[in-house]
Image (cartoon, rainbow, N blue to C red; front, side, top):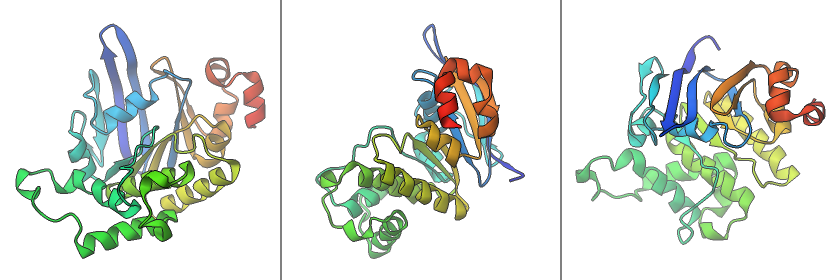
Length: 255
């Protein structure tokens, strides 16, 4: 891991007088799993929204693969190979599982008006979607109505949709939230297998056992500012993190 795939430099986002993110900087190295943690309101999802093009930064720079991309639109970010999941899972409930994956392709396919009329269910694209479902363990449910899936499978569906465009960087926003222990273990294995294929992962996570056990490094935010960065063992012992986020009891539990 010698090259930074994602380089965040003094990134800020203000909403009026509220500093949701204030001069935050960190790197995501190619091939690693980096965790972005912090208490509610720390600025984690705002950071994701800036990276994925949902927001334009008030100040600062974002470099991806050495090219500046802050202020780039979401479909342009997707074109660069960045895929993203969301904290609240909202599939197209009346569509099938495989159709939900196909719809995700639209962010890169239908960026010009002339392409709106092209087919979205060609044999090649269906096969590509089925490959994504196989990677996340949902191929057998491809024809199931997405709205009928339990939460654990919905999380996997979200990851399959993100993988369809995120062949370089995958942004996971609390993908473990609400899952049972066995589902968490299985999802950890899935994310490690995704990393083994060469895809870099940046994730937001509140489950400290998951964050400490899954991530190579952690970046900690509090009130919009970065307060710590390092390996899980270093973060566990960081006094600022213990005071601002983990708490002494939780820090010992996570050890």
